[in-house]
Length: 354
Image (cartoon, rainbow, N blue to C red; front, side):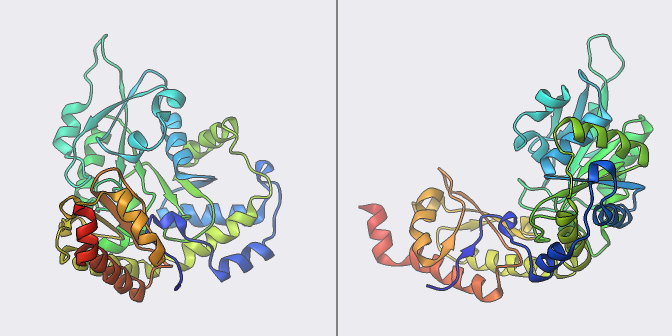
């Protein structure tokens, strides 16, 4: 069998050889005491890359988002977020459990909030209402299909927020994908948020971690909350070394993942029974629907696995493929050939109808 092609997510990437060598040679210290030189270098690099004053390394994007919310808000307050934002949908109810805030959800367009609707959602001063304490955005937007929020929309939301003295947090887990698609630097995206979280463990291939960036006062407060949550690490320079390589070397090649995703999406759209909204294929994700093939996602995942292709299943026809560093152009063509065979070959069609 050829190599395993894993399309479940870009979180499945493993460290590059250069990262492994950097980790092996990393100079380390105790980061809780702030004397790990490699971690200090990473945090300076992260802050500079996002155009912020300071940065904090955290084990995961979820922790980074929740740290930001806990730092910006007080219990009993409200945040405004897109209806299917990661911070609401995939972070285990942490908004209520950890931060003690509630979410006011606004349905966006391909993940982008409407600035006028954001302004209308900001609470007036009233005894019965929670205070609107934070506005959260996501770019790229996961559940919308890796779609990119335009910079003019981000700017408009930011200006609305600041007119009301409300900070903006950006879940920029894949901010480098957004910047690549927009043809700008990551700091050009990050400028329209007061705090930004981004991951180094997805398309950038580092093994662990994310960075939270913002003002020095914000990061000082977030650092203490990180310690409270058990995120204070010791010789974490081993992880920082890989993250430095991720930030320095990997963003420049993300366009390859985007091109591969586009080719994969266009090929899937040509297979009978598969429906793809090509307008949403803007970065490295493809959302598509196989309902008309008679299969559900779990069935497809089971029958495609012997071909050396691993995908995330689903109980219905809604599917997602994600390209990354370890999915080559040849892999894309192989996946398309196998998908066409499985879905269009008479033997499989007959077995589904039996």
